[in-house]
Length: 424
Image (cartoon, rainbow, N blue to C red; front, side, top):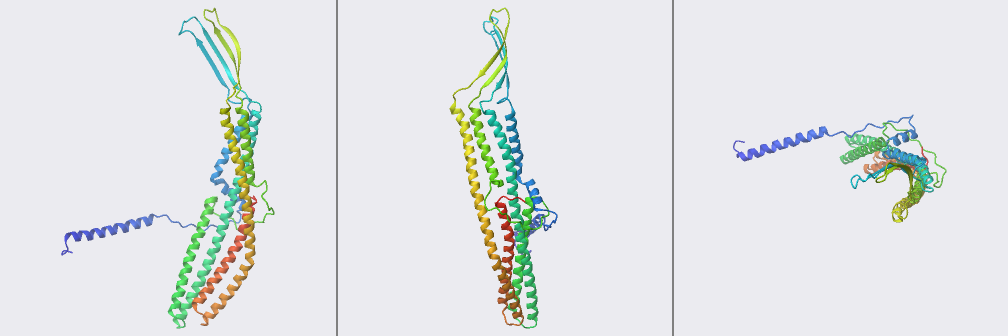
């Protein structure tokens, strides 16, 4: 290094130091990187689907809104029980000519201002309070139905992921046995090196599939944990198919939509009845002393304030309420369409799955027999390894298809029950 120019030595030292820093930084980041491993989700035999729905409902973000809905209903109910249309207020007026001619003119007037209900206004507010109470209860039930659907999907996604994981383990076990057999036969000189490489390649591919299946299973279980907050899950149990064939008015989502329409229409009635009149009554004493008068004269006065005209102002409120009611009716019609479509789709999917089950079962049986024959033929040297691998892949695919169909039948049954509004 002494024969090298100084600038070359400095550059090489700099490169070494830079490389060392990069290595240390990468090692530090790798050590600090959080692990994404998750323990397997155990099965709790005592945990029911209904209890899991309760747990998911308790932490569902939209459930925060339910308290506000209930509070709003209570507020309107309380207002409808009041004898006044709005808050009363106190009034005081003082008048004097002290800062003018100062002739002794003094007037003092006090009173209480009482907003009065318009004709039918109080009844309209009471109906709105009742409608909002019904809507609040319907919202809670509809939200629970929504949570039940999310939980059903999450659970059966775990079931599908578990099925894929079990098949991946089985495929890896088959690949391991085949690789060991091929390697032994290669040592005896019965097969070529290319068979060994092909078997080892198939074994590595099976390992990759298992790693991916494990990751998918962990993702599905993590989704369940996120939805329910639980560290255990109920056993996979098939639901009994509902006998309903149409969307009934008692469907949680439809009942909520109907309640929202009733609330919006009651709100429109309140806007019409309460904004048509703003009559108020003011009652109070008055004390006055005229200019050059000897003393005060006391009296009691009643003032009635009746607004008139102003349709351009009232229409702002009533048109806004009418728009809300129209939007609620449109949302209800859209909800009916979506529920009907979901029900038909669930029924059709369930029918397709059931039609394919019998054929898939026969295909798996044939593929299994074909695989057994192929393994025997390969051991006797009557079949090429590449052909045996194809037979094994076909058998695994047939078993995967049957397993998925069996799980999908239970999943589609659950989705059908979800579509008709059945809550666990």
